[in-house]
Image (cartoon, rainbow, N blue to C red; front, side, top):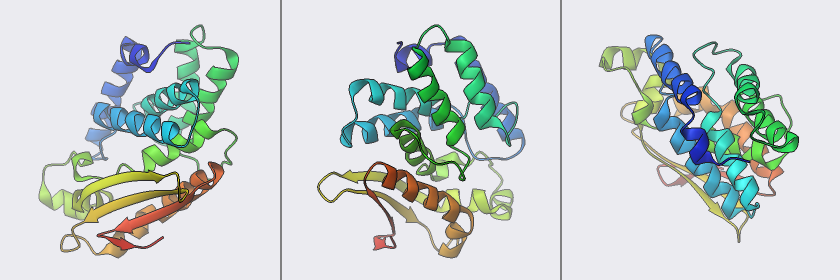
Length: 220
């Protein structure tokens, strides 16, 4: 089994992520490049460690998280499935069958809310990915364009995003600071409710409750 550091050095993976960033920027989508990949990988490793997964599962979580979006340059709709298959094609000889299928399943599951979790790595990648809401993800520079798109508006309005894990109370909490002068809070829920439900399911699979705090107000 190879490590996250080795995956991060793979030229195909890096090029896929770079092309994803270029492609989605053309469509004015939020950032899905190296910043997002690295942040999600870091969060996944942290969650895996704090909830008590093994060192191997921590590594698998961070690898799947780093690789979860790299097929977006081919398709937004099917990027999760394409990404899983592409990962297998690149790294088939570098992981055991069990390790490989765990990563593939986590990549495939991260963007399909109807899927049920079958391993903790998949649940962790969902929590790490869906918690990345922040103005640094907005690639559009024109303020009029930002205001015209609800995803850009909400991300731009989000000044801080933190995913906290409390082992004692068995809670995983997403804490956000949102500028409600820029967007009404209801707009966050218009686009993220389904994702928050998926996060709650992911936390539940890990034996935790999911919490949401916005501007220091506990909502879940």
